[in-house]
Picture 1 (cartoon, rainbow, N blue to C red):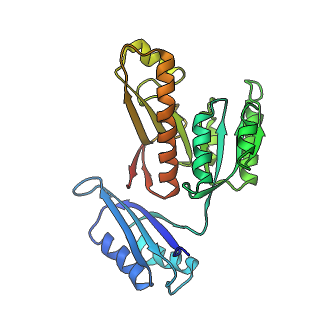
Picture 2 (picture 1 turned 120 degrees about the vertical axis):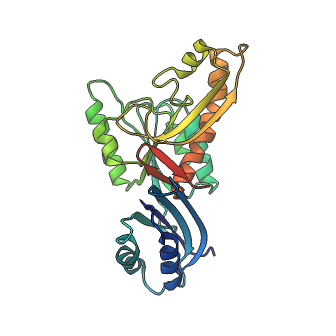
Picture 3 (picture 1 turned 60 degrees about the horizontal axis):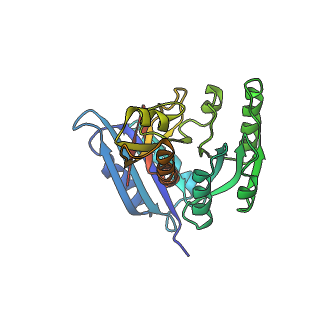
Length: 287
């Protein structure tokens, strides 16, 4: 059986002694650190980021007591923004999609093969086209149509479904609707979108045609957290491929869909593994 593990994620003002305090605290409570990553945004006076994985079978206190002690002994003196995630509690992921199936099916295949450490209880779509594909994975499919007039009601329905399913993370696997600020505020830094462009170039609709018109030599895909500003949220991962004048818009789309699948899957995996720390409109991603 795998050894129970946990992850500690920290963001705080940089100061001497942070690493020693964190590692010493975990050691003193019986944790064995198995991975430790850190980054400072500047040599002095910047922001400090830390990710630690540790085993939990030999802790001398339960999880609640450990967190209370960490808050008092380590987090408060260093003004930390922090959390501890426990592997025993698998994150629950809700997926939103429209009619394109490539990014959605990649996530479902990885999940079925045990390569995404999460539960996927449901998919919400504004079209009914992909119901059969999704239900073959044993995942509930909810058709929530969206029109300009019914958008608030549709979003309320989707949010209710995610709440009922106790969703931790929302993934937009080519969901071709803009979410309202009210929706986004319910999942801050917990909505991952795949945009079919190497942002910040070619935001909005039709980026492959925009790229073709400009005669680009490289196309890309970008996975990012959703904010109120369209396609401007913190970037998690990107991928690129070289193209030439011989390729049509449809060629670019086909090539781009492979990038979209891979980039979104990596971004979701990294989020689930607690490798992404958001700071302002940027991310620190620990490999």
